[in-house]
Length: 321
Ligand SMILES: Nc1nc2c(ncn2[C@@H]2O[C@H](COP(=O)(O)OP(=O)(O)O)[C@@H](O)[C@H]2O)c(=O)[nH]1
Ligand SMILES: [Mg+2]
Image: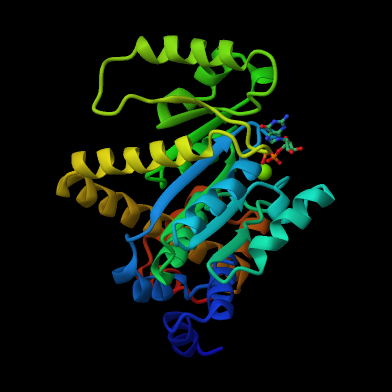
């Protein structure tokens, strides 16, 4: 397949080329670094919003309302759902699907789910790259939805400019919020399903918890929403935009420089590990494996044999199978 032709179509605004590029990135094809290098100069214009919180909190419903709110402002919006149970990935009740159809037909909206199946690591990196691809395409807003449970999800939220943590009254346990590390990552708290009992109490608890922290340039607000009824969405949009402005005002060139170095080391680590996997799956190390199997060589000796052999390392680093 001709990558440069694909990139040309992508640059020309072809949504099918966009979808195809995302698939390549998602499948971790060896061309990923070369593809990303082409796009990179155009990365950094979109507003990146993270939506995280427990399953069923209403993240997708809120995402849907945020799409509508930003579209009403004339902005283009992309959504990446890294959530196996997300309506975007087919885990939806029919009503959700029908509701999303409206956006599917809108050329100003691009929705994509990322599969989490069969992935060892690298999900955070793949998600970041998908976000880069959507950003460089020219979307004004990119929303990333994850289930707020583990380290990978916290890592993914690290790429958002503004992280919105969505909670609901029935899961109204502020201790869990602390344990899950959500207090540290939240730029905006949303207590959704405010039509249910306990929403105000949860809001108060969160505010008390937030007050215990040292004062900062941005005071994390706790908002009440009723996503289904489209209540509280305008306020949420206002706070997201305000946080983005505060963040931009306090960010230095040094922040950007450090991020670039961190991203570089992540790319290198991940690419080297993929190259090793390909080399191991191929025939590069057949003789070593045979001697290991026969017991003629121990694992450390076998590792050193590769590490101390420049020719073998070159094969490995060259990415050949
Ligand atoms: N009562 C009530 N239900 C809501 C509200 N927001 C979302 N829901 C419902 O909660 C369920 C889970 O919503 P969803 O957006 O899929 O949650 P997600 O798993 O966090 O993405 C759906 O049945 C929604 O219709 C709300 O404000 N009030
Ligand atoms: Mg969802």
